[in-house]
Picture 1: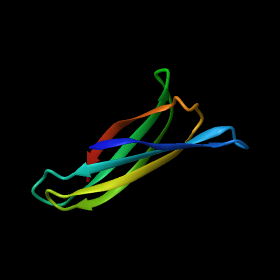
Picture 2: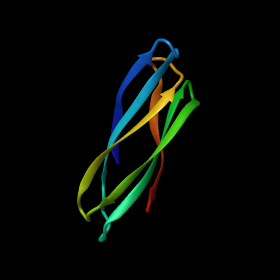
Picture 3: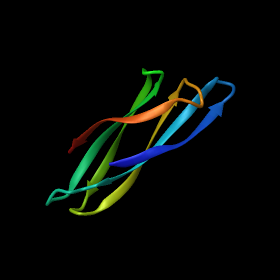
Picture 4: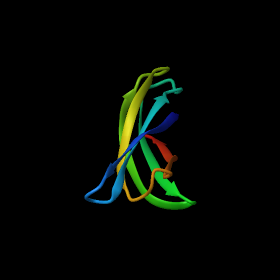
Length: 88
């Protein structure tokens, strides 16, 4: 899986950043596989939020992109990381 923080938009009224993570996942199995991907947003080693997305089945050898969004209360320095990937 490859991914990066796609952007953070500050919601001034709610005083929070809406965090987006966009990634690419490749199926290296010999049959179609779906995935459950959990992303965490952290600041100074403290988990602020997490969110999960379901990636529909991907053909063997193929790749697909996905996006996960969370209303994380943080700053522009809030980082994100892949916490868990489960093949479904």
